[in-house]
Image (cartoon, rainbow, N blue to C red; front, side, top):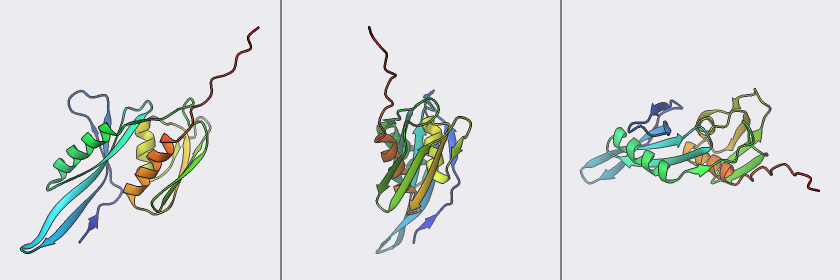
Length: 167
């Protein structure tokens, strides 16, 4: 039997004076039926970021939630990506599909804030994006939605520097 905890997220300002902030965006209890009964385990989805363009996500499984969070955080730090920011927003609109999750992210004017819900908001906040509009279509599975969001941010093209006229 699988149960899910809602969009409650916990934020930790990391131990060992790290520059990353971690946020637990999803946990669930999973069970495996064996000869003696059910084996209960937990998995946790954690997003880490430095607030200035680097973000990553990881999934960890363990018998206890703190161990699952620790494993997920280590995986997230190994899978960091760099977001090409254009001021406080993104350079262009992008739509990505990962599994059944479709994520659409559009740049917004300064002062708009983050117009996104759930796990997309966590990824964008920890990545340092300040003004953006995002929409999750298709699946509501937070794991696939986070993967689609990271894929979208990874495939963004870097803004071109302004051209100068040389004589």
